[in-house]
Image (cartoon, rainbow, N blue to C red; front, side, top):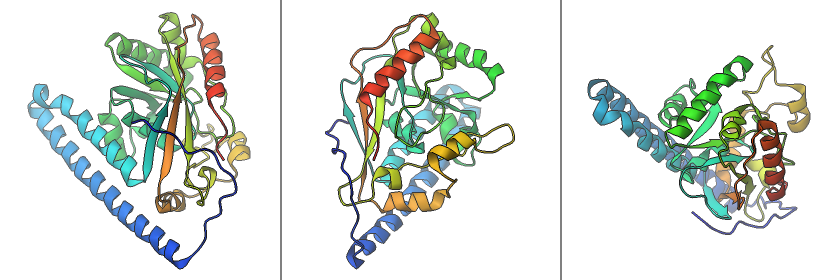
Amino acid sequence: MTGRADAPHAARLPAASPLRIAGAVMRVAFRLTRLFAATVACYCALLAIDALARLFPAQFESRRRPIALAWVRQLRKSIGQRAATSGPLPRGQVFLVLNHVTWQDFLVQDLFPQGRLIAMDSLRDLPILGRFFRALDYVFVSRRREEVAHVNAEIRRRLIRGQSLLLAPEGVISPGRAVQRFRAALLESVAQDGFPVHYAAVHYHTPRGWPPPSRSVLFGPDPYYRTTEGKIPHSQLELWGPPRPFLPHLLRLLSLPYHRYTLTLGRDPIVRGDRIDLANALHEAVSRLFHPID
């Protein structure tokens, strides 16, 4: 889907009129109902496919992913997200890197339905949602250094099979003020093989007169990015402030008339033979496309 993104705008304070509050409450109720219904329906469909796949694997193994993709589309609509792209969408097999600002970024899957995300393995075992992420056939990666070689080998296998892959090399969500350093570890395979890497910058916008994305769309610090002691790193707390509960964030998000997700794509892919050179070149390219999220 293509479209022109709303221009960034400042100082948008919503008027707290009774009519506006009533409209927001109705939106939240409707969207929560829609989100619950879509998740239950798609989850039950996945359970049925899993049962049939045990009996008839050749006929049903491949049917999990279309159901999970349908859930992604319904999730995007249920939270009021509108997607737009700026720049040329790459064709054919793609390895795409992008910055990472909030949990919603994985919905880029709807713009690249053929792609598989390289995602944290903590998503795989989430209650209910983990079944969807497994059905989407993600490449799961832990933050353990000893797993890097295994993940790079899996990335190479996927690319050889012709799959498209999507990666956020920052490795952790940021509050949208700048693009954080790109980690080079998972770029080893594409650098060694000279695979062209496309790049894009993620932006979020909200309607004029409503809270800006920094207050209504972004959510952090990353609850899954923790020290070996199980604590959120101090560096992340300095960026985001103290941890916040997810439910109030979700209710604020659902109360918006809509919010827009824009993917700004670079024109020419980047090829480098060294993973660190590649990571630095991609970081510079994404930073040129990026503008701070208000």
